[in-house]
Image 1 (tube, rainbow, N blue to C red):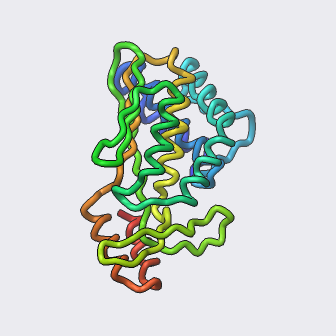
Image 2 (image 1 turned 60 degrees about the horizontal axis):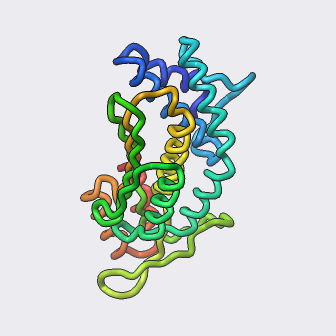
Length: 238
């Protein structure tokens, strides 16, 4: 749960650390991630008046407000992307459809796009004049878990195992939201590029904490369907 006060505190923590470019990027990314998560139900914001994400400095408050409005305008697209990815999960190093979606979105936004990084990873680079290079990173892979949420966009996907047979696949660790958030931030960076001077890199990788996650996946594949839920819960905490 995050309210407007915690959002302000989050962005204020970056203020005064480095030049204005770094502070503006912190404000931009913080606002985009918090506001982008609201329509997906990942965060909630208690708003009692007009939406203003103030940092105490007029120029930064203006930028944060523009970011919030940009993400609000993009809500329909982001929710559609989220539901599509959630309904079509792919295991680590097999995210062909997800990677293709990410690469297509980056290219349409005008990013210099590099696919096939670490097999299925995708990197989008936005050149925006001299300044620091800032990287936003997320993950794309799902887990071998059967979904039982009953949601209209619930996964019914399966994937072959190395030993033969198939396992159910679900985005049980939130990587569908990773992809959605970064695609939202990527669009915001384009819409506010006149406010910043930096080189931005959007990186969506095949797996997080690969050793531990892969061990959880292997245990999950060998376990019964009842124990898969506990593996998923553990993976969420990694």
